[in-house]
Image 1: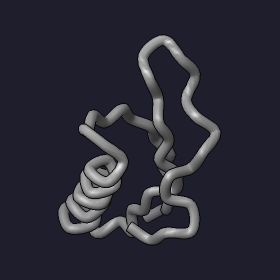
Image 2: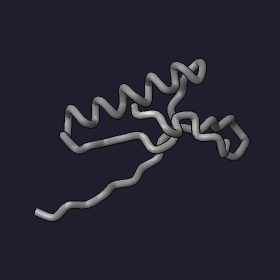
Image 3: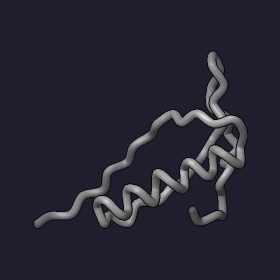
Length: 64
């Protein structure tokens, strides 16, 4: 069986930065548990409507 890397992006909605990090951690954990795939979050950026995403990575240096 061959091995591949899937890179994906998605919008998540949360009331604040802390809740966004918590939701990202939940999504990563769910992926790992369901598919045993070493899923990890490489970035989390604020993306207000009508604006380009922020350049500030909210989880840089953190492990979720």
